[in-house]
Image 1 (cartoon, one colour):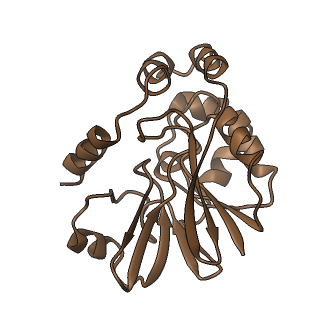
Image 2 (spheres, one colour):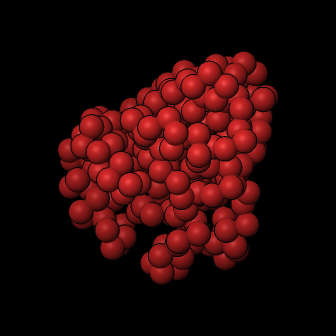
Length: 219
């Protein structure tokens, strides 16, 4: 079975469209954080039109006033009622942890902290939330970060996602046209648009710096 794990879209419909054009899978799992970005209404409409399993991220629970106003009627209630986790073909999918969409796990988080976050979980769990791909195997527990479509911390501006085939993950990235995306972001009216475009699209977020910052927040 082939499962496309698409996480942290962050209201970037062109990134989502680029990935969907490449996805060849039996199932799609969306792992949360569709909001906090320039085009929430369009992004949520694209997701709701698909036959996919959709999970809740922290940005759905913490929706800002501007993006709430952009959404179609009923969208916010739908987003905030989504489940935190699902299991497909023996693999557990969640935004950050099975019972919370807030814990921080990075490529360098100490094993004891990872095991505390995923206490009681065995096998493979696919997460997002920290926007960089990694695959960490602790024997009875394997934690895979699917990456971020709309806000990657990878040293590259692209849409990062993961294909899980018969339980085995493989990392993917999809390209989209950057100049139109930057222009659309800046023209969106999103209060954070100018800074986001300058810091995440015109240049790429440095992976190591982002991980260090996330770890400082975790501790």
